[in-house]
Image 1 (cartoon, one colour):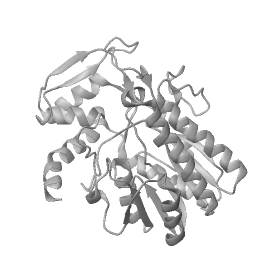
Image 2 (cartoon, one colour):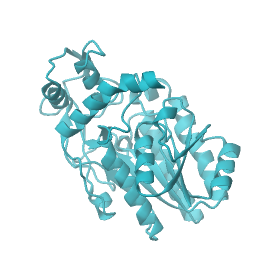
Image 3 (cartoon, rainbow, N blue to C red):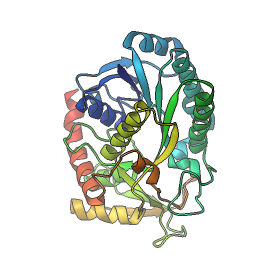
Image 4 (cartoon, rainbow, N blue to C red):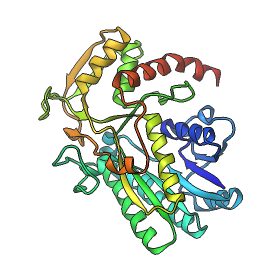
Length: 329
């Protein structure tokens, strides 16, 4: 049996494919290479270039490769972009996910693991936020993902499909073995941006607001190492294979760091004091969001890279080596 990974040439997806192969699984990657990279797909996995919303194309994959489960990463993910282009986000993240789900059901795929987001919570009323807390997203990105969660719940009720939706918090870091990392040139991830500033790839960086109701006024987020996140997907797959019920799980460390704390850590680890500019808030940014992770721990998941300095150090090492990787393609 084979696992289909949509978006498997991207940041998180490529880590997932490496882990699947490490565990002796067969993996097929579906990616349109808009933000992913052909070279990021490891040897041993098949890469099929196409759109996950193309039902005929996906049907052919499911038929030819005896797909047991789909791990669905492919999505647009930039919150400010979603505010500027809501219909584009609803088309890509929601409408195409509906097409994918219909194809999966018609071909009797057993399991579905969905890349959801902490953005479904909006401005949480409690910290840490639990999966049973109110979902009230404040941007189109979060809404586009929440709609897919609703579709999964209804689909699993009507058809023999089980799923786990993993609500990611802020993903960061790189593969400890140096095989994969955040490679998108204009990525908006905070640690990526700060590391690029430290390496002189950017002329400093902006902090979007220091007037939030947090200890230092900047936004607080729960930063999770990308390898720990990939392992959560493996634990979710094992849970479903063992007959476990469908569920929704946060994936985070149950602790948060402010934007300014992250920047200070990057400066300390890199030894570079780069320029930091304070600018106005971005639309759609909540002040604080930190995960409760009891549910994902119940699947057998345990953090192995829960250290901000380690995350920054590995992100810095990846960024230093990235130009050579890109030039070699």
